[in-house]
Structure formats: C-alpha cells, structure tokens
Amino acid sequence: MMLKPQVENLSPWMVSGTLPSPNQSTLTMKESGNGTYRQSSKFLFPLATTIFSLIPIFAIIVTSCALMLPRIEGVCLARSVWLFTVPGVSVKDITVVTKVEGSTGIVDFNIATSTPLDHHSVKVTLLDEDECPVSHASELNGSLIVKSVHLWQPRAAYLYQVRAEIFVGNTVVDTYELPVGIRTVEVSGNKFLINGKPFYFTGFEEVLEYADRHGIVVINETAAVGLNLTIVAGLFGHKPIPTFSPETMNDEIRAAHAQAIRELIARDKNHPSVVMWTIANEPAASELGVREYMEPLVKLNREWDPTRSICLANENQANIHTDLIADLFDVICLNRYYGWYLNTGDLEEAEQGLEECLRSWEEKYNKPIIMTEYGADTMAGLHTVRDIPWSEEYQSRVLEMSHRVFDRVESVVGEQVWNFADFQTPSSFIFRVHGNNKGVFTRDRRPKSAVQMLKKRWIEMVSNR
Image 1 (cartoon, rainbow, N blue to C red):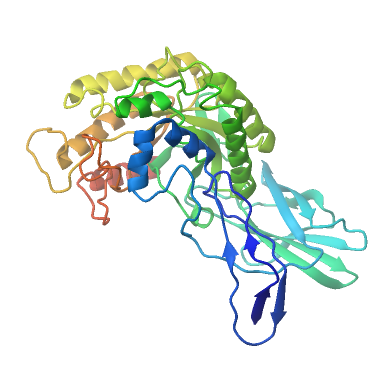
Image 2: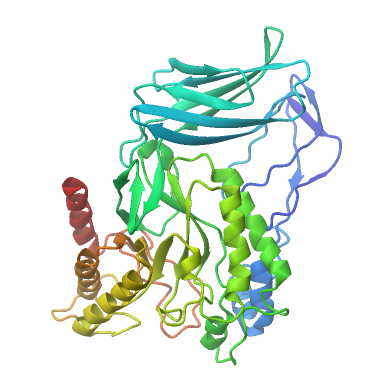
C-alpha cells in the first residue's frame, strides 16, 4: 500500500506528555508498492516547566540527564505507532459502567459516533469468553443484562466483549469491540470492596500492562509529581518557595493538571483493572493554597468518573496535624520511610513511630489506608550480621517491621513497596549511590534477599483471604 500524505502532519499538544496522542490525517492510498508516512509530534509539560524554571540549578541537572526540560521539542516513542482507517460514519468512543445485582450483571453503555446516525442503525452485542452472544441492544445508550454473570475478580479475570456495529440497511459500515469486565468497586467505612468483598492491595509502584486479562488491580495515577517546591528547593540549599502562588502553581498549571486528569480518564475509564484514581504524588499538602488548588481537581475527577474512588499520595511533611486536604479523598495513601529516612538504623523506634502514625490517621478519618511507599535503599551484595543500613538484611528487616505494624492496624488495606527495581537518578544527591536503590530487584532484575520474604508473605495472604 502506497501512502502519500497531502500535508505534513503535526499532532496536537499533549499537556501530560505521557498518554497516546491520536492524530487525524488525510492520505492518498494505492493498492501496491511501498511508501513513507511522516508524522511530527510535540509535547508540552507545563508542570515540569514551572518546577524546573523556578529552580535553575535543578534545570541544569535535569538537562545534563538529556531530558531537555523545561520544554521538550521532540522525544522518542516508547510504544508502537498504529496507522488505521475509519469510515466516514464510525464509533468514536464507548463508555461502559458495570453493576451487579445478585447473580445478574448489568453493563450500561454510551456510544458516541463521528456523525449523527440519521440514516444508520446500531447493534450492540455482549459476547462471553466463548464468543457466544449473551445480550443485545439496538440503541446508542442502554443496558446489557447478563444472567448468571461471571465476575471479573482479582487474580481471576473474566472478560466479556462489547461489539458495537453501525449499519446502513443490512450492510455493516463500522465495528468496534471492547473487552469488558463486570465488577463493582466501593469504599465502605475503612474497607475497600471489590465485588462486595474486602480487598487488600499488594505489590509495587510499577507500570503494568495486560492487567485486565490477568486480574491485576491497578491504582491509576495522573502524572503530577513535583507539586512541592519547598522540598525541591531544600534539596539544593535554596530558600523555601511557595508551591501555590500566581508565580508558581497557579490557575494555568491547574488547568493543565485538569486536562491531564481528563486525558487519563478518557483513556482508561473502561479498564476493569483500574479501581481507583490518584491525582497527584506527594504535593505540598500542608501549604497554604493547596486546598484551593486541589479541590476543583477532585470535583472534576468525580464528575468525569463518579464510579471510582479518588486518592492522593501523601508525604511525611503533611502529617496528621498539618495536612489540609485529606478529607477530600476516599482513601488515605501514605508514603512513609520509617527505618530509613525516619529512625534510621533503629527499628524498635521505627516500629513505634509507624504504628503511631497509622493509628492517628485511622482515628481521625476512619478511611481505608494504603501504604503506597515504604522501604529502604539497599546495595545488592552487601551482607551484615547485624541490622546495618544499606545491607540486604536491613532492607528485609525494615519490610518485616512495617508488615507487623500493618497487620495490627485494622484500617490498613494495602502495601506497595517502593520499589520493584533500582533505577537511575541524578547523581548530585549525597544519599544516592548510583541511583535509587530501594528496589527489591537490581536494575538488571536480579533479586535481593527481600524478594523471598515478600513472595512468602503475599502468597500466604492470598491463601488466607
């Protein structure tokens, strides 16, 4: 097939820079031969632009790592590029929401088309995993009813298929298929429920693919990291900078943040594996102005998806006494490093401090608590008899200490170790030895001692629940 673009194509700006960027093009095609299609893309990172331009020394360090911030004119692609065609009248988008009533599953759907269906008809079919039809509808907005439903369950996924077809007379002009897992998610008191049963989150802060098929539960994160200029400035010995002000995280940045939330929900709204949204990681939750910045974003997220809970990863400076926004969220997510940044080398004091921390959040809010970051830096191959920081034994002891506390606090519904594997970071920090070494695997994916301990704990959890 010969492709000859009529114009040089430029994809729209993506405010997050982390999501696929679709672009519509007009092409002239021939049935034989080879050709080249050129596509230019640009990305804008408003959040990064603000942070790095405010702290020049940080921008220099980042630039030396070849990230080319504050503005990126061209970046490499980490995923495949797909070229596909659609007819003039086509399915533009599908939104599904699933419910369960007894043994009956309900799939509410809303189909958007490229143009109004003045002389067209639509057929919507739900197929089971054997590709047998189990329910039908003939409208753009409706419900598909499934008797004796197979639920999508954690670690036991079952995927139906929604097939939407547009007809002209008896001729199909467009077909779109969407995998659908029927399940419910909700927060009830201090528990997180999937299909009406308490669920406990385990695993790592890691990007996961194929989660729908494998029954992996995902907390989906808007890429908003660095909304804490006080911490960033402190790393380089600068005076504290107010995070939320007309010159820093202002209305323009919040608008970009809002658009990133819309983009993420639009992309991932139909994945059954996605059970919760998080709108930021470690913002300055104790600084003046944070509530005015975050509250509209929480409201927007609920408007775009009222079916899932919302959370935010809280860092240690925003403790139970100073945090200003935790009440806005459904689940309390805490990043805490007792035994590492706090009470380094003293695991007895660390255990006491961690339990006091968790119980204070439990008593104040009575909401589910997930420890979204905990752990310790570890140099692979460093072994000691005693609990010495940086050793593999110390990493295991820190994790074991944390788990004892989690098991004693009823509201804790999840633990996500930071991190799956070691990774490179700027080398200018004295506390970084060739990068961040909190991984339980090395950068080349060799296991550290903590892996066996985690494997044993998490397998036993599955067996006992």
